[in-house]
Length: 188
Image (cartoon, rainbow, N blue to C red; front, side, top):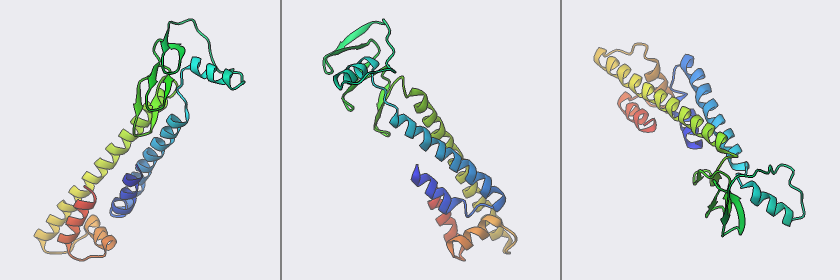
């Protein structure tokens, strides 16, 4: 996520025409911020089974006001040595039972369960929006560069080609062929 944003801010946004650069940068940064925000909430929301949470708090001598009791079916977790909800499962990475266990996310290094599943879906959706926006903008940028470059090369004159001109200024070069390779490689 940080590399996508840095790549966009340093290599794509400066090359875009100003009229497109500002809204595209806002969209990409907003998607990146929302992905990071929801990922943070996924990580700090503990999806532990409420029976295990109550048991651990009772052992520590604390009360568990946010533990809601229900009479649903239970099963015994032999690792935690306690009855947990039927849909709970023990995570071998986190070493705890997770309520309505979905999976252990290795990217976020946390379990995804009932308590943080909504945040996880928002994280994935925000990341998908970021990747689609980022990829679309970069594809348009590379295609526009080469279209403008081919027109400039066939006309043998330096007309107003904003992406080619901004690329030359940003990368401090005058050879359009080298700039084309740099733009394609950096934004691929």
